[in-house]
Image (cartoon, rainbow, N blue to C red):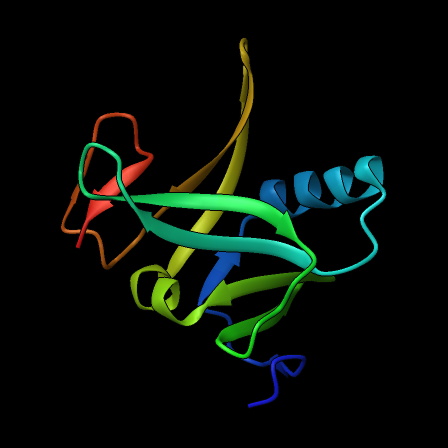
Length: 118
């Protein structure tokens, strides 16, 4: 698959609140290239932690999904751990935060909800 090709079935989904916040951030930051990169890296109290950031670079090992008008980028290694997961966004008195919910690949999660083991 060409790295710029948009695939049809996303590895991860975005809640309505997450999509709204991502679009707001894209607008506020003036992002015109790349997209939202979602991934997994080693670390955290349970062994793996989630990553969310904007990235202009798309490599040959990335899959790109069009979700609610948002370009979502996931690398091949992360896709294994993220399949079936949803990115959500919620606000509380201290601010707002993205959360990963319903990850069917997580065998154990930590109390903070930001790391897991598979």
